[in-house]
Image 1 (tube, one colour):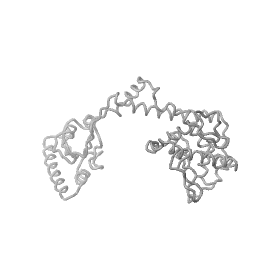
Image 2: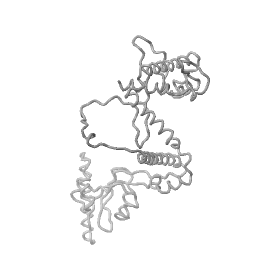
Image 3: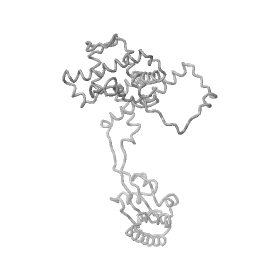
Length: 345
C-alpha cells in the first residue's frame, strides 16, 4: 500500500476507533452510526494556523470545514468495510501514532518545567556560571623573541622592528597571512609558532597566566582587528602582537536566565525520563534478537527511501507529521481549503 495513503487511512481510522463515550459537546453532524461534535470541530479548527482560522467565522465557512471532516469519516468507514484497518501498512502507521500519543501524555506534560523550583534553577545557574558570565576574550597572534640580558634584548627589539616593517610591507601588497608566515619562521615559542603565532581565544586573565601580564595588557589595549603592538618588552624577551578578533564580555544575571534554564532543565529531564522509562519497559519484557537471521538481511544501498511518514521515536522529541487528506476522485472539486490533522486539504 502507498505509504502516504496508509498515513491518511491511519489518521482517519483513528477517528473511527474513538468510542462515542469519549466525545463531548453537541452533535453537529451524523455520518452513518458515527457523530461529529462541536468540540471535535473546535479542536480541528484550533489545529489550523490563526490566519486560516479567521476565515471560518460564518456558518457557510464552518460548513465547508465540517464537510472535510465528513468526507474523512466517510472514507474511514469505507476503509474499515474494505478491511484496510487490518493492512500491515496502516497498522504500522497506527502504531507510530499511538507511540507519539503515549510519549505526549507520559513525558511531555512536564516539558514546560513549571514544576521546577527556583532553588533548583539557581543551583543550575551557579553550577554553569561560565555559560552566563563570560569575560572579554581576544584571539591574538604573536612573535616571541627570547632575551636573557640587555644585549640580547636590544638585538631582539631591533629584529622585532625589522619584522614588523616587513610584515606591514607584505600586507600592503595583499599578503593577508604575512604575520602568520613570519611567525612560523621567526617566533621562538614552540607551542604557537607552528600555528602562525596563534594564541587562540583567551581572556585577559587567562593570557596573563599562560604568558605574562605585559603581553596580556598590550593585547587587550588593541582595539580593532589587524592592530599590532611591539616591540614589547616582557620578562622572557620581546614580543610582537597582532589582534585577530575580540569577543564582547557577557554577564547574564540569574533573573534573565531563569526561563531558558527552566526550558533546558525540562528538556534534559525529559530525555533522562525517556531513557529510564524505555529501559524499564525492556527489563520487564522478554526481547530476543536473532543475529543470524538479522545478518541475512540484504541492504540495497541504491534503493530509494520511502516517503517520509510520522517520525520515529527516540530519546528526543517525537515530531508529528501533518497528513493531508486523500485527494478527491478525478473531476471532483475539493469542498474547501480547510486544514486540520483529520480533514482539510
